Length: 610
Ligand code: FAD
Image 1 (cartoon, rainbow, N blue to C red):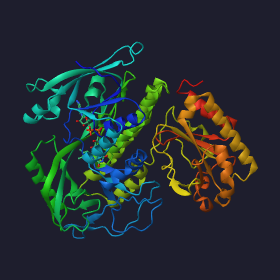
Image 2: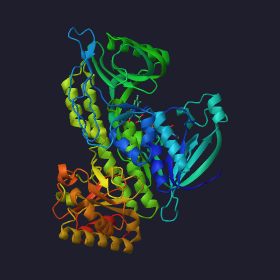
Image 3: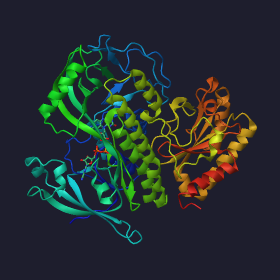
Image 4: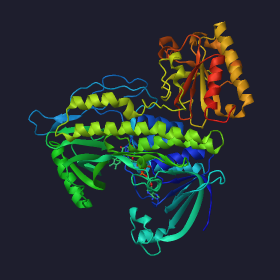
């Protein structure tokens, strides 16, 4: 048996597993990623990438690839009445409603739109295989490839004091040719006896940590004996990916259709003129298993009536399924302090809010940088408890939303105003923008210093100008993911002498602490945001001297028209706020000695910094 140990073993290379591998490898942590699927075999069925996830992809340097290879949702209604704030228009409305005679549907006339403040201009429709392809390409740059086809068969945890690699996972490597020849299904690959010659060899992989990203029926979760809490709905849904033959007026936009004949239908454009449609099949006593042709026939019939008076015919169906939704969340997200589950392994729900892959990648984006800190001896093991503290409440909220959507759709007709107000209410949640974490890695005590800047949320999308080259940038542009914390110092106008003195003292204290504690310097990048564009030319040289850097001095782009100082309600003596590697604000401190102590205390609370 060959053995190659690893810092982190990831089981499952869907969106969650690939995101975990990318973040860890970008932070120079050794990973191995095992999947039972052969390359180009499909697994997840994600479609919608929400604004916060687009920001995350941008921060990982893969946003442009995502944009290039996907469909962009700019509108869902006929009229867009307002220009978007910060470039984003995100609006979700019932786009087709019943005609007066209830014989068919017609486009809903006029509507207002929702605005969100984000650096991303649209939500994006990207197929699961495209999401995975881009992540895999990026991973290759980090020297990581998915190892296929492997299934874990046992998991043991040994004494953590003695062994640097206490988790041992035995993996069976399968024969690809046999899988193809005998057409062994993905599910059946775990049953090693099912087909002669299926197993090529075994390997025991010693690891410091294991992340189970192995989907809704997670093997890892079962090894840990973690129960899923919640229940299964009794509504059947149909979904088909196809090329439409249609005279439907808006086939290249996302459409929510309320048909008087067939209830809810969802229509999503996909690349190359293709589309996905969801139909509601109604209450069934038990889950039906129907073949591809039968499935297509049922869905096609629903679509024909649902889109009337427009023609909507299925050509070249590439995937269709009838499914029933479980709304469940895992009771725990980890075991033995070293084994974690993420993605669909932790939460299952309907695809109605387009959240599954987003939530799954958000799970591992949250977890992976923390594991990297522990592996690099920059954080204590207990920091990993914050993964469940931060992500499980989000999963529970997601299930609540799913239940509300279900209730709305399970009636024969959707009441458009109910739908709109649910979306209005949930917009920040659905987009991922409003996600607020609370754990020992979030210190809310300084919230009063900047009431407009919410501790625990991701940094707002705000415009600044870099004084080095006068380039307008978004705060998210200056926080690319590199595993570091960032400290933004907002001193107020530096033409006021007292502010300059405070800034210089604060900054040199941080630098001195950094010298004392290498780990702090390595971890913390400081940036200054001045608020006074009228005087900025005079103040730049001074700020550069104080900050010791040319390219980390910015000024508030919209200072004269109520910019960030105004929006965030910055305390008059200036503040500093700290941003975690995942762009969530972890604390706000005053720009004085107490602030320095608070920053040090923050790091001391989860590292061995003394
Ligand atoms: P998966 O994508 O399920 O990946 C799990 C991986 O683990 C797979 O590669 C699998 O091969 C591997 N694996 C499993 N068991 C083992 C094992 N024993 N050994 C080795 N490998 C194993 N999400 C959205 O965000 N937006 C949407 O619009 C959306 N639409 C959807 C529409 C439909 C019809 C469906 C069904 C889902 C939709 N989803 C959507 C949900 C989304 O597909 C999932 O939430 C997402 O794929 C979960 O990612 P994951 O990495 O956790 O799991």
